[in-house]
Length: 472
Image (cartoon, rainbow, N blue to C red):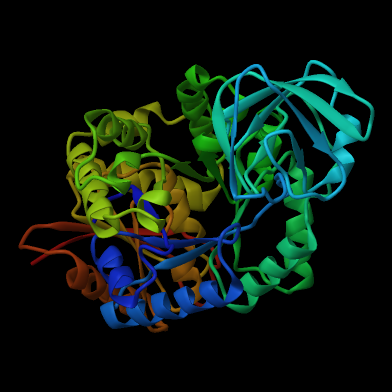
């Protein structure tokens, strides 16, 4: 099992049950559905198929749903697509019209009042750039700076402007209610600007009495970069969405930002995900480019919790092959990593918390004795996460009698979560830990397994126990 987890997005190319099964068998840990492009009927179908396949394969696979977010798009175009020509002008108006090469409308008319002369406007994921030359509060007149195509409902970004748009639309509220109803594991929030956006979602989940869904904030714009520390603090994890980020920020700055955000996220002991165009060429090719292999490898070397496939598996021609390729890249790089050096490099303050102290000692001990596995008996998942944060060389097998806790751990680095029955004594916990480990990894004579948990089970509510077992 690879330590770096993998998220695969399901779309038209991968929606069939057998394809999802092969994607999971090829190494996907989480199945993602992007509600910017999917209906609730489509999402429900994929979730039910994934749960069925997970049960058949006796593996735990997480479900992630992306919200649409407060995105701005243009309206419909006469023929669905229009070519814009450099040097011409185009008008953006607040009224709803069917657009053409001379005039387009937008989905949020109020922003016309907040666009200033001199602002840049990017259309269709940045493929066409405009410059505002006039604005009378009803019509924005722009110079077209390069040739390019726009399509109906394509994206519109104004990198230098700030709009007071409500973060949670009625559509996104319905999406979150649907996610809670379907017991989804992760909610990826699109176009987060500040920690207040995360709090809005958290408040809605409290109203829904949902303490299971983990919030992943997608970093896609300048505002999110400016507020990154507060956003990380309020989130369960961060997704570095390099495609959208590259629209608003110079592309040459993306690699250093990726490393900075990943480091800050790990320092706050949250999930770090790298996303977008990791194996983009595999949409149309059965093999990746060398540069793409290096990109995935760098994310693994940085100790990222997870890497994500988007259009490669959603609309690409080789969804299963793409997952398999990424799995092989991760495996090859992880075999070359020095986990003793990684532990020494991890920034930590003096540890006074007993569970965290045990977790650090457990990882240090596992690295020193070359333990085959660390087995963590957990009711909340927190100790398993603490162990994961110290990036052990051994596989971390997290055993729990709570299936929601098990699924909540599928994105954390190095954790293999397993559902097990409840035990009533420490001796039972130790025996169950060894039996569980032997089911998922090969254990030979003199192999060492480190077991952590609570002792005695009935009185202690935190991890205070570590034992090294040598296989007889």
